Image 1: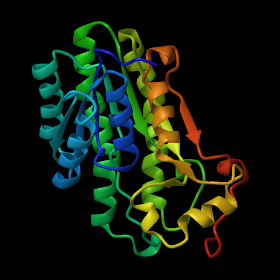
Image 2 (image 1 turned 180 degrees about the vertical axis):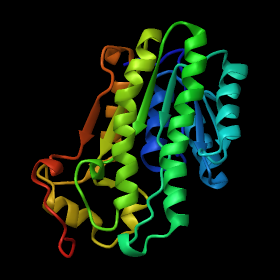
Image 3 (image 1 turned 120 degrees about the vertical axis):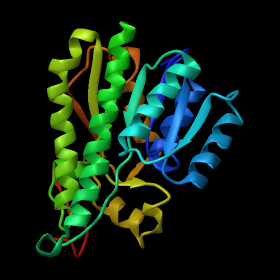
Image 4 (image 1 turned 135 degrees about the vertical axis):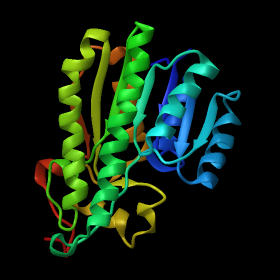
Length: 256
């Protein structure tokens, strides 16, 4: 897959899956706007990617659920690089909580970031892609919990299932403009955040049929295929990357 002369926006990309996506995109020729709400993470990520890729990465620090900032990212892509070809709405937050005590504040935050940010980034990007008249690719990051229930994740899980339905619905809206829209649904993945959890790798290795959790490259390579020219006839789909976990739905000890 080559992304030479492509311009991409990736949100939630200061570390983990989003960072890996940006790193590979740049290595394959794309110019990437890398977004994260954490300035330190975003700026360090930009430096790391540009060390090997001739200033092909631009960090933009901001809240991916804020409409004015969403529009600013799209405007920056066009003003600096002349176009926008790929958008990956990867930013999301997980706020665990018992259903009976889950707060309105937590619910609203999860909805704003996971759904609102993804919806309005896709909207702003699609407007630009429509105007360019040569198509584009949009990808949402879902999760296996959009397919398999896990305790204390009701709000988060419903946003992930909703993103998959959003991708299906946007097929109607975007296909006439040669814009394809899909979803990648990662399972347990080794990232900076998950590695802080005690026994995360061991537990998920034990219950994943392929014998290990995903690496960030597993998810990133899948994501890049779905936004590549090789996947232009794939749209409205969700691809689960979980080493077979949802096929058996084994739960870690202590989770029911």
